[in-house]
Image 1 (cartoon, rainbow, N blue to C red):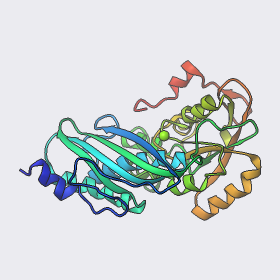
Image 2 (cartoon, helix red, strand yellow):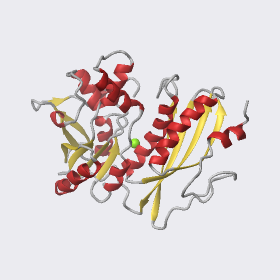
Image 3 (cartoon, rainbow, N blue to C red):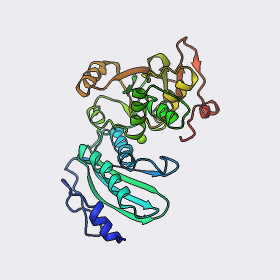
Image 4 (cartoon, rainbow, N blue to C red):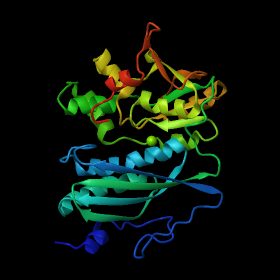
Length: 320
Ligand SMILES: [Mg+2]
């Protein structure tokens, strides 16, 4: 059975590309370029809560980094360095190798250096810290939404939640749609390039990890404004299912890792240009107005859907 140092040397010491010192000492050394601020975030994934214990390890590796990259995207930061800490129930080198393949493939896609971490024995638990950089003063924040802004989302919302329902056997979909939704659940694509490109365009941004209404609610709360969403405009999966169950997936399903942002109306042509540049749908789904902080969603008939406090819990997926 390999010892900790052997394991680290074999699996957790990939080459780095823009790091002063990655391994072998008590800490890594990184050198942010002059004029940049560092954006730092961390996310923990626990087996049985965030993914099934028997999930494909390469997908778990991908997702553990993807959710962190998504936080960088939401800040308009370019991800640069990551650390990875794992608690593993047993040393299963095939599992570790597959996990690292998923993790490092996505890291390479985004030019992220793995610069450190830790391993220990324990219930399967993964903790990734991501460090990115962003020009000083240009980070996208949650607090900048203004009355009159349009509310935008990237991609399609609800596919990951639909995928979870398929996985649980609650919904049946034709094979191609099922595969697409499972892919969204297991291999989310963080919108890093979009986040960087939205610097100077978006007034406020967040990534949709907990569900649109909850996450847009954070923008509304931090910006002290009301967000209005038109349900018919929200991009959703074409599943054949409709009604409250689909609405719950689209408005409250987590794990989409799309970006939700607000921007002044005059930025609309620039946003359409970004959609073309990245071949990624960007859809205006509502607007920001003055009012008590929160989110109102109007259905096709113009009637508000009840989503505040107690009612909101109804829309939460159990895995939240
Ligand atoms: Mg986030």
